[in-house]
Length: 374
Image (cartoon, rainbow, N blue to C red; front, side, top):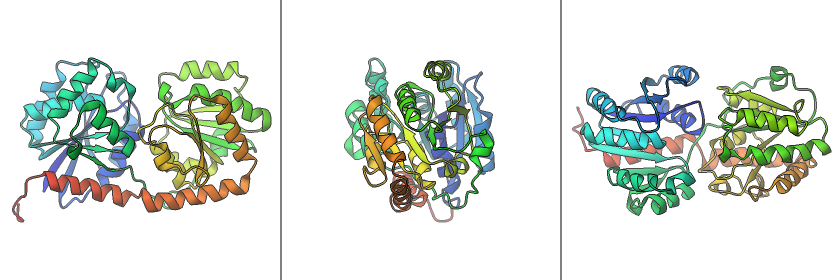
């Protein structure tokens, strides 16, 4: 059996964390022993993530990170890697990519893999871009969660084409999840209920979504927008909601571990991202058979089919987003049809089984062959 050590920095439960919550418990336990190191800041210990990992049966431990560049982190991670003796280290997100890759090499780990989860613009900026290119030389293989991220990794980080595979996010259909009464949970009266699952950061485009929702409320006075997620822009976005006169119509629900149970009780999923490596929340919406209004950026067109499972509009355009949302709400039968097609697309193109199988194939190809009785 091969021990596979995953490393990620977490401040909540966003797409990459949800990815690991799906992937790690599903790996073939007769072939792979999955372990996880979570890099956490002293002020953000993410107990909800550890609780979810424990419930999923994932063995995880916390290692503190103090600042973006923690000079003590690489030797501490290297020491822990030597103790765990993994056959493969698999990093996720920037801090783990940088510190975890160096630590794995320092510890003599045979294979280092990195999943690239996003096409973040900051990865192009000097000096980080130069540092990432150096790190890329010490990474045996990359997994990109979309064709868009694969192209970005090759272009921006100069990763060799032969060392980058696309393994798209996968998700179960959600049939096993018991829905919650979302209106009772948050005290939401009758009327159109829109949901957005996203970190409250610049990337997710709430500064465009909220003014667009103002126009939606002008047409549908009883509409409500449920924001599932948290982040550094929460205070500013709450101020924007007040300025727009939407305090009674927008609910900041914060981090939730039961998104899959809440979404089926909503009517329309909205995502106004300015850039997007994939958008795992889109799969969660599709599992709930929700139609989607989203921006045509990054990998979103790989997930949402315009005029078939949802409506795609240009980014950073409040009027376009509002128009598409209003048009959707005016066509309830079409919304139902789009939602059903989205769920069928999830099952056909983005299954959990496919994601796990493709990941295991990469591991098997990279890991040295061992005797059958080892």
